[in-house]
Image (cartoon, rainbow, N blue to C red; front, side, top):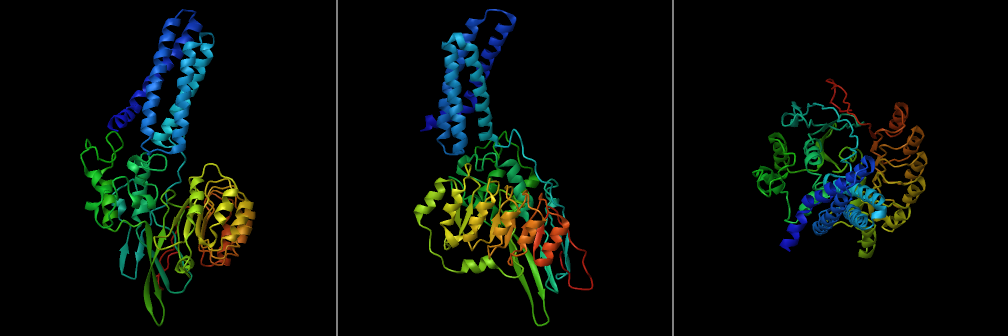
Length: 497
């Protein structure tokens, strides 16, 4: 076992041999053709040596893949392109009459092999990075209830990760809502994305550890849990950052971009304060007969930090649904969905209500929606972002009456889809970021009585259409990618708008 593991770890070293040698053989062929010189012996030797080294590199890669730390689909592509490169290079050595053609094909296959290998190591968007959204503005808010300024203090820890706050609003008279500093989304998550996701995400799971979702962070890796809320000194996620850089357990590994002292301090503060993945906000209700303080939370999705917010100003619809008992899903159905790369998770060990996520689905088809429908009222949250779903697919969802959160981010839906969405009686939040929704679609959303949050970044809606939606649903919160707060009214109890 040790020898095979060691040989597998040699793959990054061995893989450079066939790359250099086969490219050199291709260069010799071009040189011979254009300079009219005889170097056939050198070409044959280079092709043979490159082919043999490709065999060793492929074998080492196979052993490395057995660790299970890499995305299976990317491994499949990389592995078979590597095998193809080996076959064509051997063919080029033996069949001299068509050597030029076979060597050209081998180099093309070699290029694709290297590209897929780069995706495995650095992520699928490494060569062509996706454009990231501009950060929200830093906002300081005044908590007049406590007669003190409440400011996000993480800017002092890291000037490159300035914290943000999310807009909140309430139309209840004499109400005051204060959004508290959200360390995880505003400071921890950007560090994870920049310096950890390349080795610990859905593409590559080094040490069996993923850091791209809350569920997997809490699950830990092969060596167990990495996080102890409230105790940084008992959390390997933090302790491994403090080890000497040449220590085998130091994170990030030697040679990778290292965390600055300020970034390490951010992790310490986050864990020390409870390692919360939820945004807290204080809602101060001031009535004639009673005064009380309500603490609410907003959940965050790690893989898409600015597009999954939950709020509850009038009624906690989802909370009421989760209070009801529900029968468990048959294991056979869960296995069926898992085989199709659909992630199904519950709300806790004692809950049979489900969250369904299509993030890993790479071959979407409408029949997958039919499979989800078999879960019935157990589905409370559904994420279909970046899938080629159509309006007819959304029409099917009307059978899932308990959906409270629906993510349709970057899908090709039209306004017609929202005509079907309005049939979801418990819908509290919908994400339409990056879709073709217009003001006509917003008119349909006005019929969603429980709707609290709508994400409309990069849509075809207008300010006029949004204002009309707010008039129809006074408690709705519309997120457009920025933050605005009304100036405090010193004559009344302060409200954040």
